[in-house]
Image: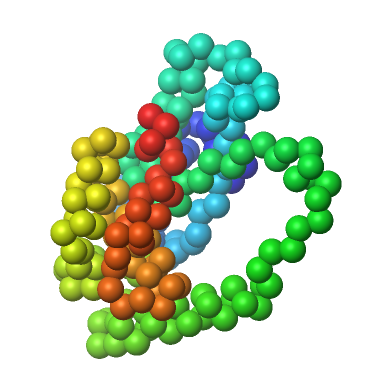
Length: 205
């Protein structure tokens, strides 16, 4: 979804159920039907109406009130359900013209497949559970145990960012995935720290 904040708030709120439960419910007078709706939401939006808030080159012309109204379309419960929130800065001129070679796609694919295999092996015997995103609270207690340093870090983030219990659980799921991608069985402080860094919007508010 491009320009996420340009959608009406009530339309965006309809995303909450499928993002959380993986299905949508259509209700009529005497009938209620559930349809499967598991999907990956990829969305983008400008940081403010003029598009330059936080830019290092162009100065933002929006007032604090305008920015507040702009972000008000994205409710807290909706943002809780968006696990990865990343601010993308403007490219410098030399970065646009520079020929860069990143990690080969096949290498990334292999690492993702290995992480997926780890999750499948971990969840053997658990009905309808094949990936970290579908873990419930009892699964988090079993497979996302934190040491004291990691727990303290998460608690600080919860206090400073005003995170909900749902957002905290989703940080743990992301941290579990980061650990899987690194081939690690146990969650470490760096995994939790990276997962917290992906809550960009929470840190902007």
